[in-house]
Length: 146
Length: 342
Image (cartoon, rainbow over all chains, first blue to last red; front, side):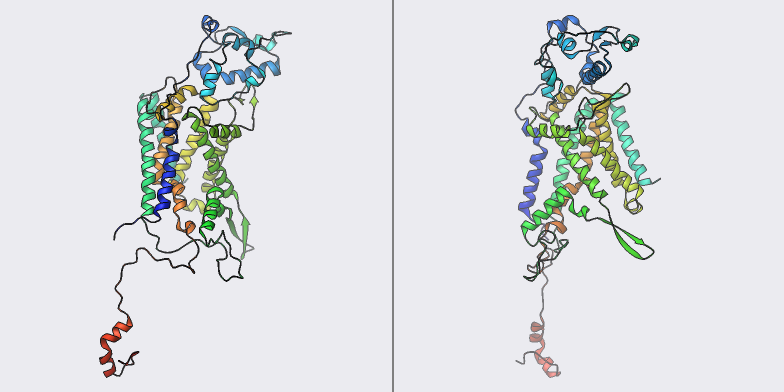
């Protein structure tokens, strides 16, 4: 009995569709060099040498830190963050983070675009506006911390 | 305790330990990061195509479309065009509804004898709902993950991400911090659905009875994939720029092991690799099989067109007329009746 393929046209068409879909990442990126983004540190950032957390922790967890900061500042009016090294910082994206990292396009955006993340930080915190922190007071909570 | 799911659970735990200890203790990052994913991908594609070819070479002896409605008959009887498709178009519509919305699961009922002998049909859509949630969430998760495999990230991936993170869930207090990175609903739905599909096999006696290790294993594996992914995204945290640099290396054939990516990532990757490699040899092949199933892809036109069994052996037929020709004279001599006298 000679082996025969049934509904050849449909089956081949299905297999071609399957192959095209599965290989999508391979042909989509064909001939494109897409190296991981290189971040530019400003002179201020270089001079400061250290961030509020270690580089590794910041890379992976800065969004959680910022979320906690917002909670603390907005809900508990606690404006001081004390780093693991005991150094106090004012919890502010615009005034603290972006004081050193004033180059949003070359620092924040590069990785965010690369990993297809659209943070809503910039909905309010437009590019690097320096705001005066008025009625600045250190709450009891942050004095106790650390 | 049921040996079937204990075996599957143990298998998945062993896989976890293999990947975890393999990278954490033995430092086999190249094996778990490059060799195994490529091998699994090749097994998946080659195995999938081989299986489909195997099915394509298998003849369909009988026309056996499932008839879920009135077949096309006399002109004054209304046919069910989709449920008993007489035309190719009907078949395509029925297949599309089956693939996209699992219509046959929607027909599911639970039967119970009430008051001793009264048979009752009970509305039962949970399987349909969970299956739908599971499959669509899985699709959303797969599409979302393309952001790690494409540069620039195409619009449809961004669109899925946008819709997926539409509901903003934020819980922030001293114990938990949820909200950033944004919650993707598909991951949670996928985990919830896969847990339901597992519990269903454990707690419904009839389903439990027919469930084998090969039913539990993929469920545990997918649970493992979900949990490791959710852990990485929301709790343990991973440097996703390094991860993307690595995955982009894989798809551009310039693999390089990333620095500072934790073992959970390798566990996640290994689980996915195992799922891919296991796929062509398992029940998961229903992805391709649904299109090849004769009960769904044949037209219900058996009364109008003859379906010839392709394996019919070419039998030499000796008809009665030929038999009579051979023995006519002897039959007449013996006084037997013949159809043709000459």
